[in-house]
Length: 320
Image 1 (cartoon, rainbow, N blue to C red):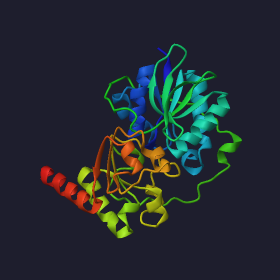
Image 2: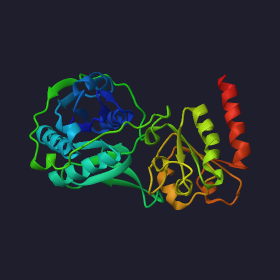
Image 3: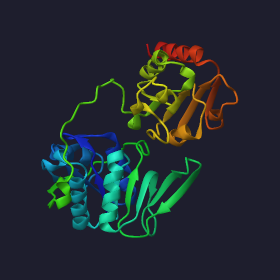
Image 4: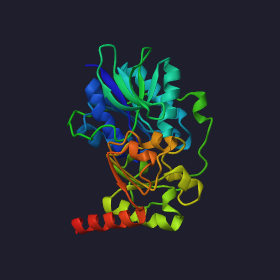
C-alpha cells in the first residue's frame, strides 16, 4: 500500500487535533507517514503511533521557530523525495495552506484546499470540497504530480489505530530562501479557556441581533455551558462588539463543527460561506424570514435574549 505523508501540527511535542484527524483520513488512501518538525518533534511519536502512523519522520532545528514557513516547506519537499508518497496531507490553517501551496509549486504538483473528506480512487485520492461560498459540493482529483491536499478541521473523527510509529531522522538541507523572513518576537495568545475556534466540535456565534458588546456575555454563557468556542458575524465584529479573531465567514475563519448555533445572525452569504459545512446547524432569530432559516437543521423563531438564557439554564440544569 502506498504511503501518505501527514504534516504534523504540534506545539513542543503536543499534537493538535487536526493532525490526528488527518491520520484517520490518510488510512483510507494508504499508510500514514507523519512528518514532525521543530522542537519536541520526537515527543510526538507516541500519540502519532496510537493513531495510525506507521512511521514518523522527525527533524529538529532552530530554523523552524526562527523563520517563517520556508524551512517547513524545505523539510516536506525532502520527505516527498525520500518517500514518493501517494499524497501529502496538511491541516487547513492559514500557515498550512501557505506550506501546501509552496510545496505544490516546488514539486510541480496539483493542490486541493479545504477538503472535507477523502477517499481512495483508481487514479489517486478523491477529495470532497464545498465551493462557491458553499453553494456546491465537488469531488476532485489531482491529475499532475503528488497530490497536496489541505483538510478542514473536524472533517473526520479521531480514531485510535495503533501502528508501529517507527521514528526515523529526516535529512533536510535548507534553501537560501529559508532564512528570508525572521521571527523577531512572539506574544502568547491570552487564553479564554475555550476551544480553538476552527477546531471546536461546537461553536456558538452571535451577530447583529446581539446588539452590543456587553450582550455577548449571554453568548459566552451558552458556549461555556456546552464547552464550545465563541464566534461572531462580520456585522458584530465590524461594530466592535467582538474581536476579529473570532469572526466566522468568508473574510474571517471557516469552521466545520459538529454543532453550530447562530444567534441573531441573518445568514448573509458571507457568513454562510464560513460555516455551511457544519454537521448540524441551529439558528435563533426573531425574524421568521431570515435567510439563515433556509440553511438550518433546527430553527427557533424568537428573541435571543429570551431563548439563549433559557437554553443555557436548561443545559446547566441537566448537567448539574
